[in-house]
Amino acid sequence: MKTITIIEDDTALNNGIALALKNADYSFRQLYKLSDYRSDEPCDLIILDINLPDGNGFDFLKNLRKDSDIPVIILTANDLETDEVMGLELGADDYITKPFSLMVLRARIDKVLRKTCTSSSVEYSDGKYVFSFDTMTFSVNGSLVELSKTEQKLLKLLIQNKGQTLSREYLVDRIWTDGADYVDENALSVTVNRLRKKLNAAKHIQTVYGIGYVWRVK
Image 1 (tube, rainbow, N blue to C red):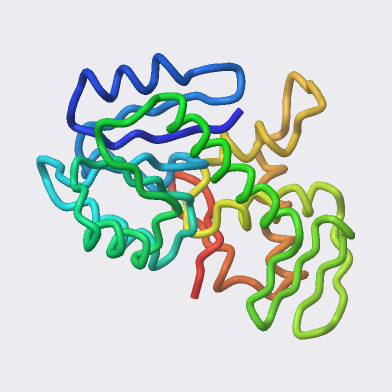
Image 2 (image 1 turned 90 degrees about the horizontal axis):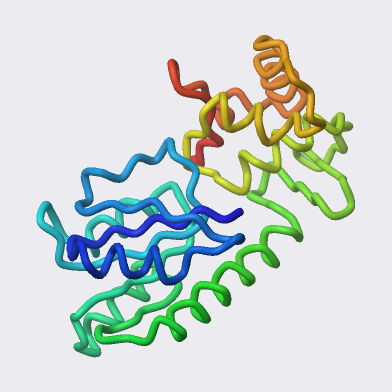
């Protein structure tokens, strides 16, 4: 299930989007101001208003893009062409003006998430690292590294949510999905440490104490 975060101060509109579009594939987290957003909560897409009580959506998007590529759809009453251009240049994946059709919004959400899934399934490369989750090949500075299935699952979650802190509970739930009633709490720590060593990635796989772990984009 994909988690979609709505940041919209109009309560009726916020509720309307969540109720109308919620289904077996999507769940919604409803926020009403920018300060409610937490980067440590898993999120697959953000629906973002521009004019909010505690700040400007453009500024939020600019800061978000410094270390995260979470898809963002701007949903706003600002219908000036200059605003749309600014939003797209700052890294928004789509720009929709109010009033709008819920059917159109659903189609735009589906399109953005399909694009994200397609692009993330190929590989990750930043010069030092090349990870291909399709072929299960992983290299550091051109040298292949062998990862266990559990380490691959952990790495994929971190890469798919790079710049976001993922809680220990979320990672355990997503990695150990074999229906086991009990997973040793130390299993995640051991897996993280092994992955760090194999990839020489202490600067990238960082612990956020009391919460979980993040793949930090340098």
